[in-house]
Length: 278
Image (tube, rainbow, N blue to C red; front, side, top):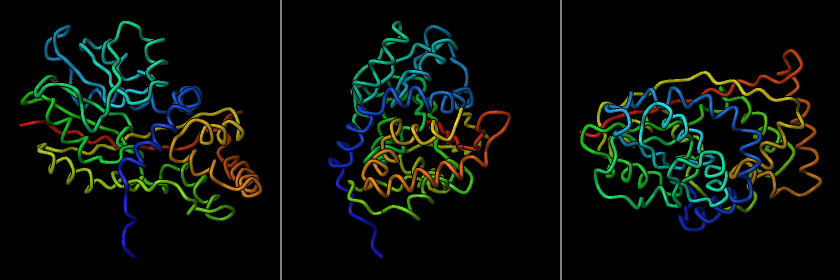
């Protein structure tokens, strides 16, 4: 069966609208999870060679968590994101950091501007991820390092499996949404290695990181995906009301299996891909 045709602008606009809507929900529900990857992500690009002088670009910076930790580690940080709603959160919470509106696929920085660059789960939401990798390579100085994080496949990142199985059983997995690149493409280490090499990077490493998502209740889990994500939230919001009610009931029942000591503890491992510019 041929792969669905991707219309980059349509998918870009869908993602932008999704993150404009979901910024506060993401901050509320996913922040505690995605923040767990920040330390290993920054470790992958190494320490700032000259504290207070070395520059780092946080691509798809979202609410600014990565930028803030990078600045604390001594990097001079610029953060870029295409969602005004996300940038409003970042500027509110981290007013001393330079956050700019911009597109990961067409960065508004000169060649060789940065000593390092990172992207925390942002590559999953791009219409043209290869273009973003080429841009990351372009804005790095020779010897600069780049790292990005992605989720593991749903058989390991079990929150995704719960939602996707419930949609497949009680809803419509083929609702009309703009087609994007496969969400779990870069969960395959070979795909990440190949894409980074094609963009010009060398010495690619893929490192697994064992994240655990802690939530108060099944209701919060459902709310997180419905109101705090773009692609999965778009899938859920496109369901018919009667189907969505069945999906929610199935999710509530299945996620309860992760109850531990009064809260939910859901395995959500990820991968960090890193490399350097020759």
